[in-house]
Length: 175
Image 1 (spheres, rainbow, N blue to C red):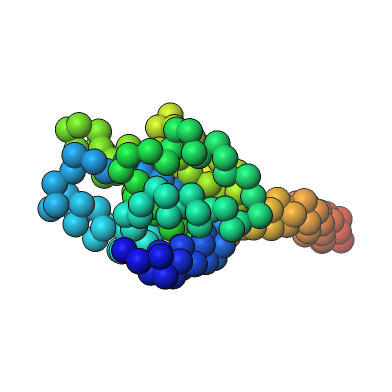
Image 2 (cartoon, rainbow, N blue to C red):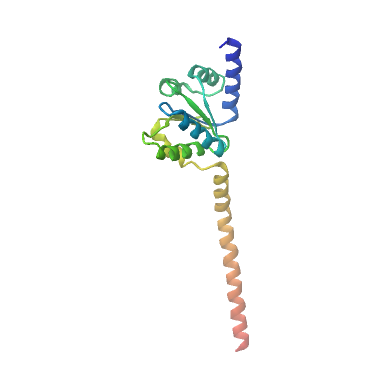
């Protein structure tokens, strides 16, 4: 591959990393072609882009981002590397990996690491943590629900109290 071609690929990958605040690094070595195609299909269905990229190109693309990704060099960017760009929902790739691993007898693909809003999660043991992350919309919904809860309680108390007082006045007037 020529230097100009590499520069174009690095620029493209760098833009992907900037556009997607959440991305996962996986090791799918040992999977058959059919299994990799099945993984790609599941990724496509969930709106996740899965690409296999050379580690040197990933390193050079990450260098263009204003964040410290040096921890990825030692343990993550070695061997076979597939990158999952998740877009809006940061936990969706983790959920997909857990689901896919259940069907594989050798527990593949392996999670090498992930970056969520430039926070790094390194190692297979982080998969459970990542799969429990809530999406931005879910968090906003919870905050709105928490903010509305006290107001709803006050309104319902006032309404029930009004009915009680009206019933009491009616009962007293009938006597």
